[in-house]
Image 1 (cartoon, rainbow, N blue to C red):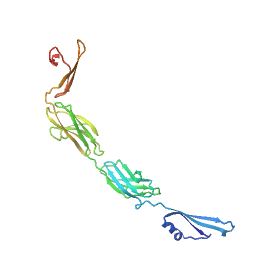
Image 2 (spheres, helix red, strand yellow):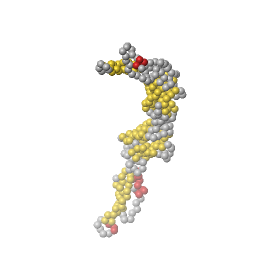
Image 3 (cartoon, one colour):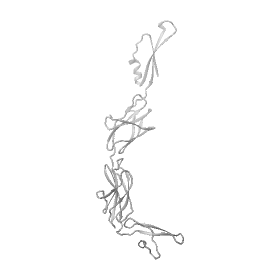
Image 4 (cartoon, rainbow, N blue to C red):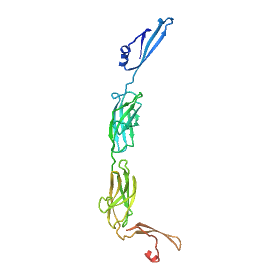
Length: 312
């Protein structure tokens, strides 16, 4: 809108009482112009001055009454937080940033820009500390010279938890040795796995307080040998893993060691005639028996049941 007022050479105009009340009530930005016009007669009395005021209506200011977060969801984990929300505001919003810090007055604030999708927004903030309180607010940029800050809120991150570990199968069982497997599937919310391995015993629910073997550190699969076992004995084994919260154990598995003196199981699988004076004979060891096989081969003779002893 434009407002104008015709005045004489010597004029006094009361802006407070005459024009400004109209502009203020209608919430306008305004600018005042003084224009001199000569009507073509060469006398000062024919100079006409116009006082012109141009105005345009202001955008609605963003404040607590016009901009509102109508939906807000906080998912706080051990080392990160995700914030999802929806806002209500009729004007244009250029950006929304999350200001976050560990002090209630946000004097240590860091800013993270949200992803806007219509009037929905979200942001994921990482590198936080476990079991710590954080304060945050939203800073709204709507294209003016200043931004709007929402009220300060707070959340607490999750604490670390014990690791999750799985006990695998046991194989290569002999009289006094067996081979076991395990896998660490969770580090407890981002903590370091400082130890992992297998523990065993002749009673249920073995722990690292007795027999155990360490098999490295970190997430993932691992394996190890259980040694100094007794022959013909039932053993129970569990995988374990440790972080700053303690040691966690996996499911329990069991196995039975070989009886003492158990011989290997071996079979002749194929005989190939190579001519009148030579043969190719193939065999397989299907079970090592009570202990590891230290020698294997072929023996032959002109009598039934040739033996290794007769070949010496």
